[in-house]
Amino acid sequence: MTSGATQVSKPKLLVLIGPTAVGKTKTSIELAKSLNAEIISGDSMQVYRGMDIGTAKIKPEEMEGVPHHLIDICEPDHPFSVAEFQTRCADLIADITARGKIPFIVGGTGLYVESVAYGYDFPETGSDEEFRQEQQRYADEQGTIALHDRLSAVDPESAQRLHPNDVRRVIRALEVYHLTGTKFSEQMEGQKRTSPYELCIIGLTLDRAVLYERINARVDAMIDAGLVDEVKRLLDQGVSPTSVAMHGLGYKEIAAYIQGYTTLDAAIELLKRDTRRFAKRQLSWFRHMKDISWIEASGNIHENLKAIHAIIAGKFRVDLEYSSNQSL
Image (cartoon, rainbow, N blue to C red):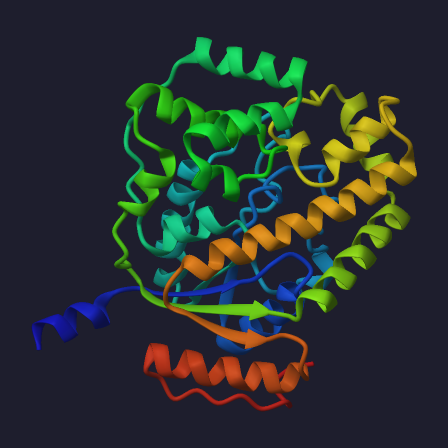
């Protein structure tokens, strides 16, 4: 009886994950409206102001009155970290729960979401600023692929999960190994896998070929919506091409075009390829997570929502049914 009481006392936490372009935004809005939930963005790039098109950031009119958190909370020169995300999320979850609503994390940054869902403890490994600067210079001079190869040599598991353009996190993984002699991936594997929350994780998946078609179409739509002008404006405002934010998908590729290193067509094709590869890595990360109930996103959205409501009802042990009259 005691363990049951402990479980009931845990705050509820709903999570929706899936690769980029799978359809998380629309699904999350409909779920949030029907569940009286508030959405916490689990995207590591949507925290930055002025970076809207390239991050596929939800527009205010698309929110349909659903409160969204951790969007537009810092400037592009701020090195937002998983530890900061975890701290902010814990505070938000407590606040949303106290107001009688369900906290609902939606996003595709696997480490960020997982760190909150399972209360990861990030060890105080310290820092070595001289080492960081040395690695950054190496990336600037030899390229991000060469830096990523350094990580592959000492920690292939972390290298597989990190994009070469994610220079800050590649450098951090190298720094952890440099300071501790332990792989960052091993530290993650050693994390506890119990949650401080009454947890329900829904994963959206899609046939790989269909997903890649959606990704290609999304990139074309971003270009049509003004992605080049968005990146140019950020550069004109003084945002460094080597900043954390500018290493996000869409920004590094288009910045290279603006700076004259490549053509626009080549930059667009590179962005499509990098985004497809990113989606593949997202799925790889999610597949190693436990507790995920997967839903095929290619079906009718009403059927998907009905199936998701049934999963939530079972996880949270509540009487919950979905009717197509609730939304859409």
